[in-house]
Image 1 (cartoon, rainbow, N blue to C red):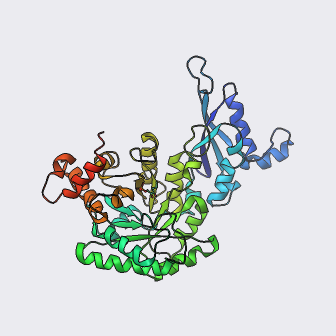
Image 2: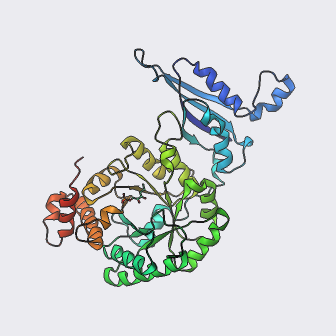
Image 3: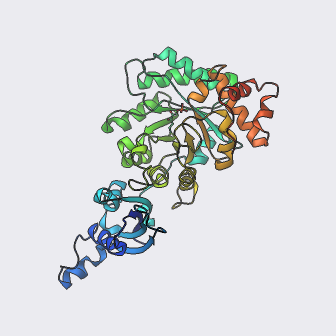
Length: 410
Ligand code: 1AE
């Protein structure tokens, strides 16, 4: 809608008059009070007043306490908030997030609001271009066991991951600035390992180094990492806030893809009654704020997100959105090669298969862990069942992975 941002909420209440509730949100989050104002002031306030767009009440069959809800859509005039995500979020769900059982499901921002957001600098296609891989899903490996390790150890781990044929390697999100593996030295050591591995594999690789520290130092730290050779960044977006990602992604000197980690998201999206829907939290808002890749739990692995929600995150990252580039979906956590056919069935080609334990915990070692994934991806693209592919010569890593973790059927 022109000049309006529309928020969709799901509100639960066994008895409420939801139309009244909707009106109280529309007025309460905009002009504050309405009925008591004199006519002249009412006219003055009109352009600031929120409007109820729709109220769809779901009456449960029978007396099922706790299940009565309404989906409420409210349009907020752009004129009420500055063109930044903190202002928008505080308007539509600031105080309201604490006011009973209500969840923010979606936000449709106006073209005018969206125009302040360049979105992902590289996006899905840009990441593919950097890696020169267009004909298959990408494979990402996560550093595991990094805290307390020194540079030589990290470099060795990096080399083994790279040898396995992965396209991206990301720091573990819990690796912060530390004396053993400081940012610039870590980047230099890992990029040197990347060069050595490339001589073996012929493959390009992005290393997403964890961008950490106080907010005031993040942009400088990003530039230091890039000057030291970093060709991607990992960022714990929710711990810092979307606006910080937006600042980083719109900074011309930070000219590498940014991978958004979902740390803290579990405190916000899983409840049906509170918080913010995953598709908005990890989908639309991450993309608006400029994430080139977005990690989120999958429906298959160790940290499970229901499939419907998961596919909604994917859609938010990939569907048309104010002309912004798409962000690469990265369903993660507890992923092993036996899940690859399921991932490709749900996500298609445009997905990053991402694993930590599923690579480092491989019975034949870290490099074989990556190879097993690449073999599983190849088989899934050919339509060859994994059991069959695993028997082919050279595919011993895939067989070992299946022996260790099995295959999950659809
Ligand atoms: C949803 C985030 C997943 C993540 O960051 C991570 O470290 C996963 O590790 P694994 O694959 O479960 O070992």
